[in-house]
Length: 322
Image (cartoon, rainbow, N blue to C red; front, side, top):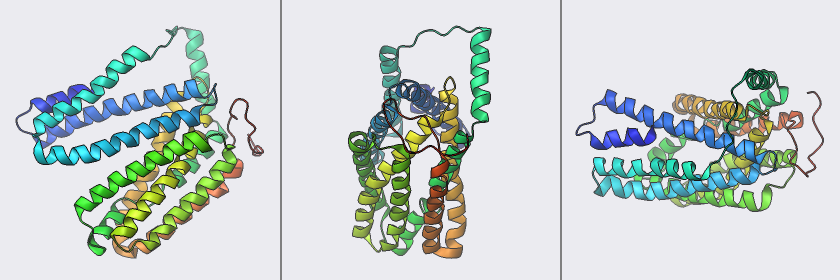
């Protein structure tokens, strides 16, 4: 679907709004679908081996490496290459993913019978009633609810600090490179840390990283903050992703991991909408404080989070309740 959408855009001579929106929705649906499937494979293959943390590290290192290339390459293409040729080039990448998955991914054919359907439905019902899963969802929502970031921060940097849009693009590229370094560091040094300890550290990093933006006074402070905060918060972010991967029930991994990622997106988009509304009313300083407070609220949930330990690992003391 993604490849077909970009190819159709490459063949158009004009771009009416409604048609372009529909085609981009098609490409987005294709990419979202493959993302969910990739995450399902990550959970199904990673949980039995205790490798969800390493797999997440590899995934997000690849994502941010692509972001660095796309940030630099996209700027060049927008200035020197026609839309049609750009869309044709973009269509190549999901096509390569299609070829790679067809070659590399192997899965035994599942029988579609009543017993299999009953087991899957039972897993779905158990997951919907799972206390640990709901607490993990609440943790992820609070973690991602940061109204100071996104549009308010960009408006502040442009309108108050005088940072240009070209510099904003450069900051995004720098932040992606730092996040890639954080993902690699997580896979190398932090993935074996017991999850309760890692989550407590993640919340502390998140609060400190948010409050650090009180030091945003100009271009060089923006560069320093984007590098350091992106690197360390990527380690914290992957700890929360490891929580999500290990909280989902067996036989419905893809469904519930996708649901948890939807909670992630709800927290991000909800905070963006609220942040845009509050920015003109209370200013960035109060938004930074609100973001730090919602992140700190995650500490209240850490003692109540219980997930399956990694094979061969000893986790922190389990939480009371189910």
